[in-house]
Length: 122
Image (cartoon, rainbow, N blue to C red; front, top):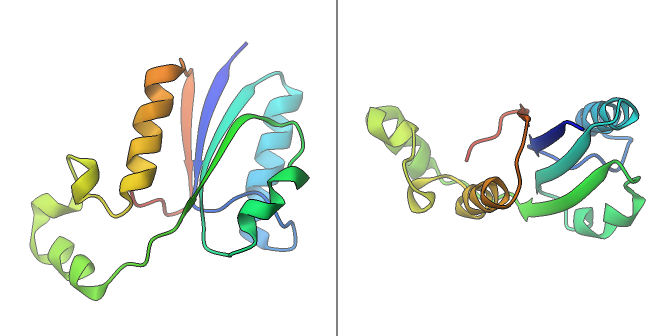
């Protein structure tokens, strides 16, 4: 059985938000084809973590991480300093919790594929 690490800029629910529909349908199609999917998703709506129970059994593991606020200084630093564009550690990344979650998942599970959806800035 193939395993997929799905890293997304948003969770797959609620379905009335268009970008979330993409994740929902992707997970549905992959799971119907026998794939095992682990989800790491950023969220920006306070109610998003409460919606996890609405997710179908498409995911083996689900981790939602609050999308951090980004300040203009961080964007400017990455614009001016080319080396800052590609962080080499969690502490220098836009989202240290997501970085750490990715490292954690990769250390615990074997994946055949990692799929990043949306503008995921780690």
